Amino acid sequence: MNEHDYQLALALYAGAALGCLLVGWRITGWMWRWLREPLRVLMAVLLLAPTLVDPAKELFAPALAITALDLLFKVGNNAWRAVADLSLYAMLAFAAYLLFALLRWPLERSGKARRQQRETAAASDDEPTLREILDQDAPARGDTRIDHHGERRLRIEPRL
Image 1: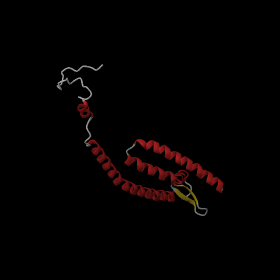
Image 2: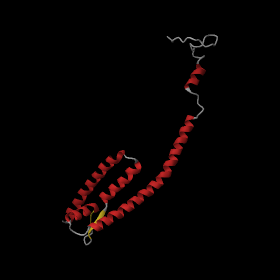
Image 3: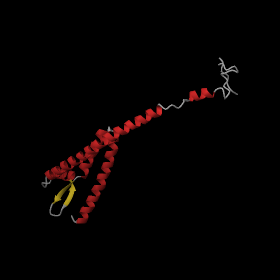
Image 4: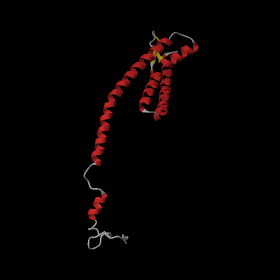
């Protein structure tokens, strides 16, 4: 395999891995967020983690593919190196995700508190309701429920 073939195979794998990530994102879209996000991190690690195949040429390949091929065909001894690389990348990715989640958590809580405070402030404004506005305007607009003495009629007649 020459350099051009290696680059072509790596580009094909990258396209397929991104397609698999897209499908994985669509599949996990309905889940609870605290379950969905770690699963997405795990999918990304499994599909995108590289491992060294040939130290002399510095050739890298996906760690999951190397592990699967070494175990399936029982050739080479790169499976343990690939598993070690997978676990290292998974540990780093989950540490970064945990840091991101811990930073996001207080921001979301403060945002939710501000939103609730805004809603309660909007609900408790001293603006009159529609009924109060209409009751204040009733004598001026010639309400048929009030007679010429200012008393309430018992019968409501429609306006024509």
